[in-house]
Length: 98
Image (cartoon, rainbow, N blue to C red):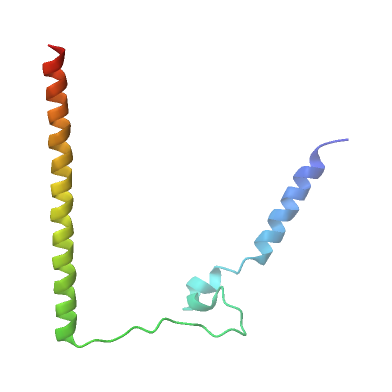
């Protein structure tokens, strides 16, 4: 008895899986990307984005930038504390070993 039955089963499973996948050709041939994995009876649910006035958008961006700057400063402070604490421990160990 040869072991080719397992290989044939594997090849059949690969063929079946490939047959179940949607074709990639129409996705690139036309602009059909949004419907490729959707069932035909389901509606496409697209996100609805809020629109805000330009002045409010500028304020939102300003607030985000300020918060990012605070977080950057806080991270720099924490890393500095860790660095100088580690440096102090190394210096103390060197002094203790001599």
